[in-house]
Length: 189
Image (cartoon, rainbow, N blue to C red; front, side, top):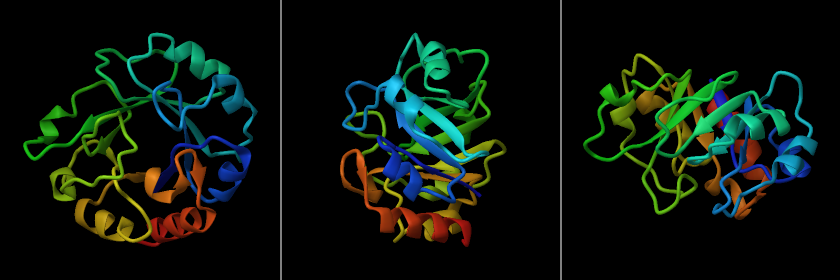
């Protein structure tokens, strides 16, 4: 089970996410979890933990990814092509009429999220059964926390899960006990 903790803005929060397979850094300037590429590059991560950059319609994604020492570029906008030289995860907003046929983008994995005003981090869930049976790697996102991650995994059987806003004390600052509990519950589901 791939467990991603997103919205990392500081070293203490990265350290608290020990056990996660991926940490997410948000390079969307309108997000309350925005981090500069320079600051992201300074945050240490353990060997083997993927460094994932969240981008929204960013033409300089590959350049920023190199600067921030990323492993994966996660595209949340209306991108029609994937940057070269990096693994790509494509985020899709799941509405009630969502179909797995939409998983056609050239990506390693798809992050399925609830729709919101901004791109991601809304804290809202979607009908997880819509993700069940996908032939491609799926990460569930949107409103996941310690209280519902095991139910989400049991419903959709995803490749991974991603949490952000439900693990925070405020935007950009994690509740370390919630982070640890989320990781533990996701890995034992």
